[in-house]
Length: 194
Ligand SMILES: [Zn+2]
Image (cartoon, rainbow, N blue to C red; front, side):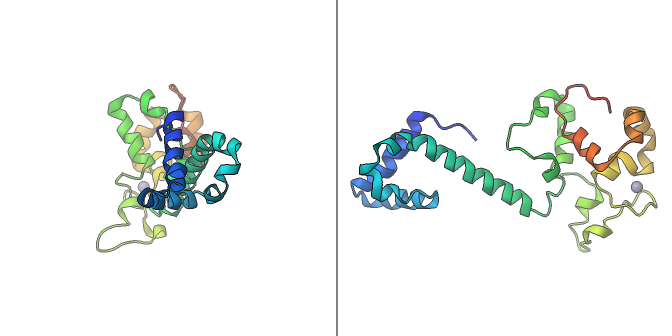
């Protein structure tokens, strides 16, 4: 989210409260709704007696808008049934540093794993004629009867054993866990010993 400048916030306040005080009917209606939506209904009645509040209003309003947006955004992620793994990676609403640290030709693969835009069965089993329940989206490349998710793909499935031994540090591989898997894939370290 782009930060709102103080001047912009003052303009917002003028738009809201000024319009309401002047009974500008059209803008007044919109402003009244926004004030109500963000819990500032009292401004409509107390603006003349709360000069200190008026001065603080831009920063208070900015914080309220950001808080509401973050709450709604995290709520939408939490309710999304496709982004089960994304919830593990995206714990803060911030710009992800890995976007600048990882070379562009590799970055897209990490992004696809993080956002479930991959071809693992945990994702592809959601679509098609025969939609499978989550516990039946098993790996089709081996007989382990495990769900084919990112963790299975990176650490478990024997099909990728050769490439795994080549690129993953042995000590880390021996002690692997779901937690470590997501920890590594969400790391912002430029050099990580995996
Ligand atoms: Zn497998």
